[in-house]
Image (tube, one colour):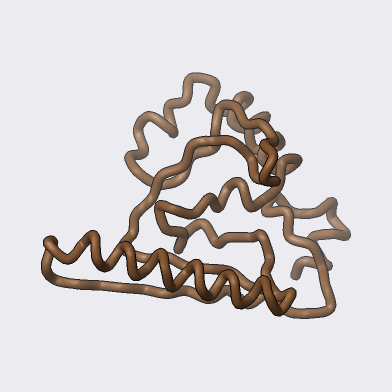
Length: 139
């Protein structure tokens, strides 16, 4: 599918065709007691960090993060790359210049009004989400 989109000009997610399939790993967690939130969130963060480090050590980590399953500590829109984010910003400015969609849709990840490249290779922008489900994405 990525190769087919390349023939039509690419894709807004910044995905590149490679020799290996993109495998999206999703961790989903539920718990009952609100007083366990901090412990569970800490455990989730540790699991994601450990699995991300493992994938990176095996040269299998991809920057792409699937937006629908991203946790609040992740930055899925940033994972698309600077060129794709700037494209989304132009589309947003053209079709929603007043930011109605952003203002009326609570929660979730939003296309930032501005972004800039920072030293660690990530984009500097705001994001939001939910820790009810989180994931790491590997190539």
